[in-house]
Image (cartoon, rainbow, N blue to C red; front, top):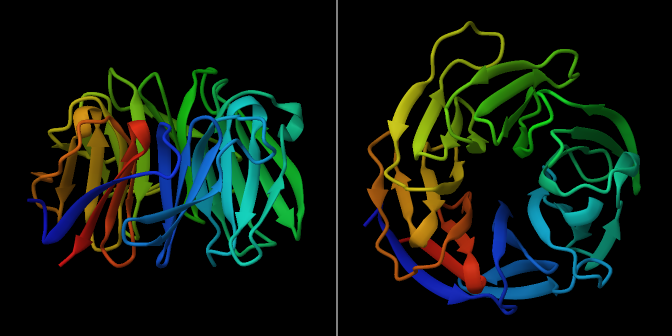
Length: 300
């Protein structure tokens, strides 16, 4: 068993393919196909914020990101879906099709406090929209194409740099002003996801290789360390400041690395493909996937 956690498997209140999971403090949220957004009330306790999309059209919701204060949960998805949920007021606001883009947004990253956050959202056309909030209003500041238009699989912002990856195996990074994007081919296969903690950036390629970036933007050209996660067809990676890394993938695979150690198999009773992974502040690991499957590993 990976780490000292008690693993449990439960089902979403809405049976659908769950695509991502995000947390802030002791709160967590999961997104899903056909317009699902869930909120975690406690261990293995999930309620639905909405189940047919933010305005009832059934548009799939593919990713989520919380503001730094946890007061807003941004979500994105099909046909230009973009908006946020405010748990304190149980309200949903939408900002569909920023810059008139009706593409599928695969990834969203919010940084800053609610009402003044910066939001990055990446789409299937290789575009990254950068918007800034002033209260409830979203202003698009730029639309960047860091590569050649290949579909982007993830974008993340750590308040110093913006990182992105695409289906061609390319990793991109830039300073927050996005004056220039640097790019590097990491793999012959797609780079599926990016995560970061205070020290390092991590990427996961389709062949299961984890790339650990000990040198961030502007610090030279050291090659990243390659680590075999042991996960075939991985879909997501997440890490925290204690260097706990979780990788999920096909067939219910979930492997965890603690404090820079080798990846170890989590003994869970789930066969569904897992698409989202999150390491919460308290060390709980959450993974979500097909058929409304939710896996939780709570520290003992």
